[in-house]
Length: 458
Image 1 (cartoon, helix red, strand yellow):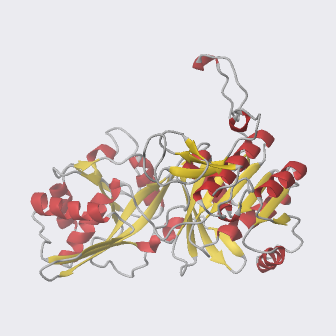
Image 2 (spheres, one colour; image 1 turned 60 degrees about the horizontal axis):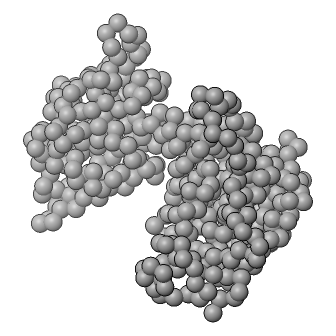
Image 3 (cartoon, helix red, strand yellow; image 1 turned 120 degrees about the vertical axis):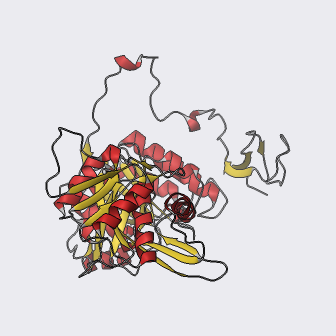
């Protein structure tokens, strides 16, 4: 039986019950009752008041739009992901595997911010203050004036935020925080949702920027209710292998900047350091070209980045395997079918393995052409020319479709010394426009044309 100050609300009809039931007594839906805090007597709807003051109806053209002021964190790669820096009153959710560097990165950012005379607060629910101080010493942050609070009770955290009024506060982690208004354990759906809602209201009302550290499930998604991602302004994910020294921070949602923007960091003895030229990480250094390797220019947010795609085609058994790392496996099966039907390259009795070098995850379809050329190169045992790259989406009819911001991709490739490119015809420089120096571009409209170009180059 729940206490008097706790009720169970149906997610379907909004009806309430004083105790948990398998079936909602109002709409008869099963497993929809979720624990929530009851409204205090006489509170009415004040508990759920709007975060912003009510305003009159106004035409969109009459509303004055102003740029949001940002405070740089001192970490250039983190600022890139955030869209330029921390926004006053913004709420950021950051998730990642255990030990990948979330706490390290945030502690470095807080130290940089307090050194420019901003008040900062680090709320730790998983470590003691002594453990945080020990980490700071390992990172070389001796003499740091970052304020630390070891607390997991929401009401005490809110009181501290109200009294200290920090410019930015980190809650590490939201799964450890609990509210006395609920009887469920910390980390439960009800506790995470309620605590995040109160912290978000505090951020909007006071102007304090709040960073919530979130745990992830074994699949890599943020643990807790999906509504947690809808409540915050920015969602960042830490990516990368914990056994590698490189880490990627990707913006999945950002109300103040571009999504899918990434920041690249290298883990050192002194913490995370930004990598200014991430393309060097994702390109293997071969003395001579090898079969099954093709360089792709992918677009991560606003940053063109060169990534090596490697393919290995080997004789398989009666049930050949299709395995991809860093790329969509279902799309790989589709590309193999297109390659067979429209280019006459058959892999139905071959094992096909595809990998994006460096642990990067590529979700854009512009990788299709590079994947297909790498597979063909491995199958025939012939390496692609030195300084070769390709990008473009391939459709089921065998057509090569353009990729967004193709000119920026080509300029980035030329800057890094690449000399030959096979690209969609729509991405090639138009007649009369300025050519990209040092780069020979072969525009194609179909996948068979791309393979013919490669045969001529070999």
